[in-house]
Length: 114
Length: 113
Image (cartoon, rainbow over all chains, first blue to last red):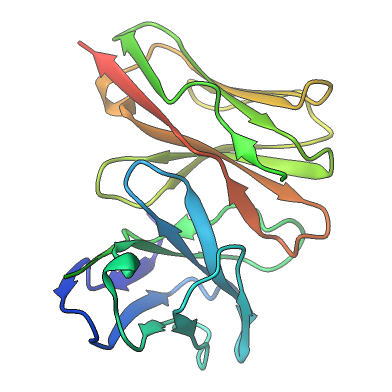
């Protein structure tokens, strides 16, 4: 089992609220990722990080932001949530070096914006 | 654009049969491929990977085949069990992509008892 944790698992909030999705891993991985996944659909990369103080935008444009102040922590923030942000957000990590290799995923945070 | 996609969105098999899940990719620069299994309400789990210098790789009850000529990837599951019911995604990584994985659309595998 991968040691990567996401909270909250489920979140229902109103439009305009600020939310932060937490992601932590205890494997010491340098690389971390956020993917967005709608039900029954593929995963789209929205943010990634290669280490502390490194953050990059992914392939899918997102209004969310991320930070990487500590190796083990990669939170995602939405300043003002909208119904279009309703989705599942999956955090992942992998070891640096060679190919990206195996990504270890968290259980996901399912966000519903009313 | 370049993408990774699946031939069939759903697959239904009888318990004990072999399952084959297919995936097509369009970028010849893709050099590393992974199959993931995602059960309902969970994050994807690694199943097996293969590098582009290989044609076949076997794991426990699973085999991945790579045909670079037609840019096709398949996952074979032997003696499919009810616990194999899940969505299966293929993902590819390209040289120079900074280790990013691009995921395909997924195939829902249903195993009938």
